[in-house]
Image (cartoon, rainbow, N blue to C red):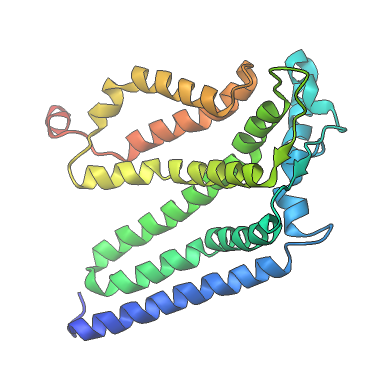
Length: 270
């Protein structure tokens, strides 16, 4: 630990500057995203609306992979397009603002974790600093990986199924901007949080609340639960798209088991 003890007011002052720098970084990122959001080649059209078009990279890859599978042929339709409508006067403006903020939050995530690290690091021993530094780096990487899986796999599959599903041909499918953005942000951020499962398991293991035996005991139950979760996320029903979601989720389960310590009895027996 540091030899110079900080007073309560010193800690409060440091916290104030940490919050100030964090909020300032969010504002700066949000301003940049706000400035480049609109336009034909802007962030909204080229990135956020990309899954609504048949030339989205995931659809093109599935079309290439699915050349031998008839149930994937639908992804080869380049004319595919989902129409997004707006029915409220101010929705587009507020969507512009809120989307800029959420993208800023994602991109500023590494800097925000660095600020948290800088605030707590003076109170740690050197060996603790090495462990916590690794935890922050791993957690940040897993969060971005989860968001990428959500954007390139989970959200497009869910969107494509739900937007094309018809209970009656008398109903014209039109997706509202609010509905699209709610699902876009929810699924991507949920996947980012789900990918923090190994980190959460590691923390629970450090606290003595979780042991490796738990994963061995409930592995079969976890497979069933993860299959159900994958089916809910991608309700299209074909095994290929189901596996696209199930395999990463199951890999997270096994990775979590790897980071968890064995139970005391398991250590003794070993």
